[in-house]
Image 1 (cartoon, rainbow, N blue to C red):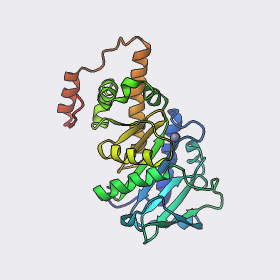
Image 2: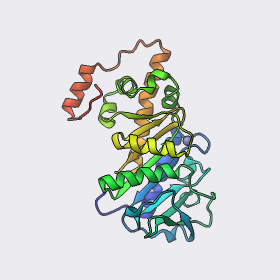
Image 3: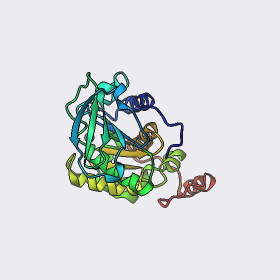
Amino acid sequence: MLQAPFPELDDLLEMIGEAGKRLSEIEASEGAAGNISVCVRWPIEPRSRFPLVEDIILPQHVPELAGATFLVSGSGRRLREIKDEPSANLGCIVVNPDGATGKLYISYHRRFEHVTSEFNSHLAVHYDQIVSNNTNFQAVIHAQPPHLTYLSHIPRYQNEQFLNSHLLRWQPELIINLPEGIGFVPFQIPSSPELMAGTVDSLRKHRIVIWAKHGVMARSDVSVKRAADRVEYAETAAKYEYLNLSAGEIGEGLSIDEIRNICKTFNVKQNIF
Ligand SMILES: [Zn+2]
């Protein structure tokens, strides 16, 4: 939930661009992989950056989000290029009063036909979180960080308790930033209703979820860069775990007592360790 003064459209575009650039720097968005959306519930005037308008049907009914604005990456666009030309790579959707349709505002320079094909999952997560928490802002990112994704191919890491107790032991920051741990959704076809439903459910309990054998989805109700940070923390944890596997598992990691003491000191509530 953000307090006034609220970020303006250009600030939001800039922050989405910076998040996209960082995801690219950590190699979590090869080619045109990954997508970003933010939902804003204060009034935004899109036409200064997105003068053209098209009618669209939303992937699901979101009556409580009537009037909300979404900034969404375009299908096939590269996250690393958003920063240089945000309006060519993003669309702006305003939900109509019926909650079933919207207006897609776009630039003359748009480089995409439709918004990301994962918008169904993005919208479902926004809707679920906003209806339950009544926040006025939320960012959702899908990215494909290689170490996390690689570990999701190894059967024992497909168990959430095993996954989290092994990944969150490598740095004090990890349990502080991801106290609910990382969720795990078994493999589902990209853009499918099954992936959408599994993601919504897991993001109720976690701030980031692994899509098995594919990537991750992260959320934040503070900023899009905070959501990107969550991807980076989880990927760093996975990188340490991968290093340890490669080195013959000679690292001991933080002990359970050390992690519990960190949590006590920083007042972190968690039930992984
Ligand atoms: Zn993907």
